[in-house]
Amino acid sequence: MRIVYLCGALDEATRRARNIDAANPAATQKVFGFCRALRQAGHRAIVLSLGRGRQNGSGAAYDACARRADGAPVIYARFVHSRWTTHLVSAFSLAVLVWRLRPRMRDRITLIAYNRLWHYVPALLLARVLGMRCFLDLEDGSVNRGRPAVLRMFDRLAGRCFDALCNEGALLANNAVRSQTSIKRTLVWHGTTPGFGVLADWDLRPLGVILGGTLNDERGSGIFIEAVRLLMQQAPAARQTMRFFVTGHGPMCPALEQLAAASDGWVSFEGLVGRERYLQILGKCHVGLMLNLSSYDMGHITFPSKVLEYAAAGLLVISTDVSDVREVFENDAAVFLAGETPAALAAALIKVCSAPDTAAGTARRGCEQIRAAFDPQRVAGDVVRFFEIRN
Image (tube, rainbow, N blue to C red):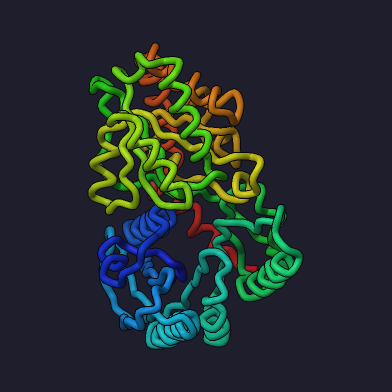
């Protein structure tokens, strides 16, 4: 099978070369990992990426290019740092790349669109004209609460447009987003275990705790800050047994930097780091925090794939009870907070410090479950079988 993945995945070298100040490492690793698994299973899979981020107004332009990133062949569309034309350039450059696939049409192409980005529309229209089978990978559903009516209407129109263009089937991030698409054939998939050699050393002290990803309130950064402050006040002995690492980017970076500065080295704020540095930090950790809040739509309309990465690396996952996380970790293979509060998080961390052997056992069960259930070859086989079924 020949599979083409339309997405915004962005490897670290390209992000830096194009002067893009932020990226989504978890989504990038999910896409690259899936394509790598497909190729290992004997299929031809490539990534067609927008290769873009927020434009900076400099006018700098970057031509379309091809490279190999994390074992996956990637073709990046043209990108310009121009306020008025950047989106049009990305959209039509991606369509040109799809057009250039025509010589390979001897084998019918299966095309996947990652989320509903309007940049894909010209490429998807062309793909349908060329006879490609188009699928939707709905990683993030629509946020409704608190959004103006005009934006909700735009989301509904986008949903209808993509459901029509990608009517062969939809891959869903979790069970909750099934109600946000009219596509009849669906498959819930959460990603694959990453292919890195990091494994937590539970004999290492102090215990490392990592919070990573998008650093905003809806993903629990506020709860984390208050929980650390509680520990400073009520459990000062935890300083000797535990250390915190924060990676990523988002609106709460300044508050997290202030927390780190006031912690006298107890909290290390790393910010947006490259993959190599991230793996170095992960190798020092034993606990991975996933604190998405159910009071926000984001806690329900996506799956936090970072929990798979944490568990596969042997970390104990401490999570709020959102999305499909509880279904993924069976038989007490992760720790779920008693409530979405700083006190509940602080209590869970104190429990880990007081019983590290018990925590290590839970982490080991989680690691075994995740590596078995989300083995790349197994997941690739399930998805390919889904693609092979014709409407």
